[in-house]
Length: 128
Image (cartoon, rainbow, N blue to C red; front, side, top):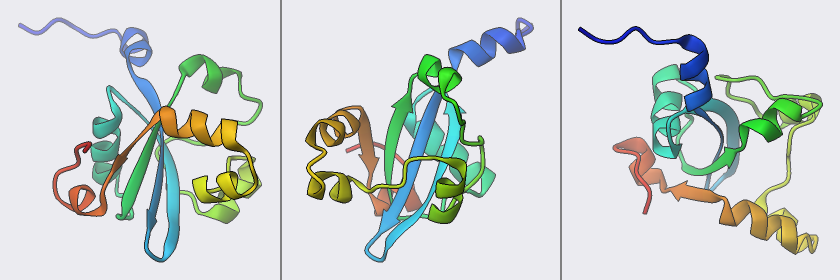
């Protein structure tokens, strides 16, 4: 017989992921989900109907960073750029950060992120 789960303990075992979607036409949206790993976060976005397709940049957000943030982005909701601006979320693309000379931030984001290509996002999300 399976052991009963403790919701508080289950919550503590999930990580927070910021998923940013883009394709050749540009930015498609962002969502924040809780999952056991980045690929599960992409799959969860599919299940919730908040994955618009395209390439996905998966960024792990440390729970302590999220919990201390003055403004938190809502979970399990696809957000466009206007909504991100309204909610105080990050709205610069990696390319824009690099062009503005924000090299350290660009490096930090890319080192803590992974990607899922558009084809894999459509069929079987996994990292390359």
